[in-house]
Amino acid sequence: MKEVKKQIREFKEEGASGILFTGGEPTLYEGLPEAIEYCVSEGLEPRMISNAQKLSVEAYAKILAASGITNVNLSLYSYKKEVQERLTRTPGSFEKSLKGIENTLKYLGHANINIAITSLNIDHLSDTVKFIHHKYPQIHHFVFNYLLIVGTATKNLFVVPKLVDAELELKKTAHFLKKHNITFRMERVPLCYMGGFEECSTETRQIVKDQPYLLYLLRKKRIEKAKVRGEDKFHEYSKADICKSCFLTTICAGLDPRYARVMGTKELYPVFKNPKTIISKIHSS
Image 1 (cartoon, rainbow, N blue to C red):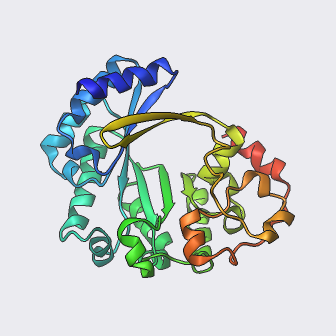
Image 2 (image 1 turned 120 degrees about the horizontal axis):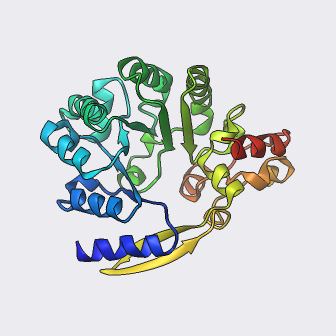
């Protein structure tokens, strides 16, 4: 805890306005409530990304609520129990996720939803969003993460959807959310597959706003700190030659390098839209 508090103070000295607890799974860390309390005492907004499993325990949800955290993103991958539990590889995780969301809303008063986009849930992504909206109308923000090809995904490439197979569901999902005035972000999806909702690209927003952030990496029990600007984060991302003719290339990160190495870049295509329109939407939101 001493080291955690030291890092929190360093963030504050660098001008940070908040701290994000993620992982792994942050709720597995016994000192999490104390770390959150310390953030609050230092005037920093604590945020957390969790799988919601431990929050299904009402007593723990109350402890976190008492610590002062109000900004929480919870993961739910599908409204279909069998898909959720296949992706988490944990029997019973579907019911626990729903209970965790319920407890978070009840005791913390707010929750956002994170959905990893995979080949197992992409065909019903919009239905999952509709399910969450109807069951939890208090939820007003979603984050969609295109599956990273790391860890077990490298040995199970079938779970990684092709962009061309995801495009229709991404648009249906975005249309539903916009219709109901629900905000959202999409990560690792190039702008040519986000027609009509490009301003919701996490990478594009970081490029346009060029906001620096601190990155802490644990390397062999030694903490290394790096200051990264939005425009520098995506220098390893991949683009196709055809992207050179795209009007949006300066504000589009392109493909995650791990996706490009496995799937190639042939799915990319140019978009002939004025980037100033997208930039204006980002600055006004």
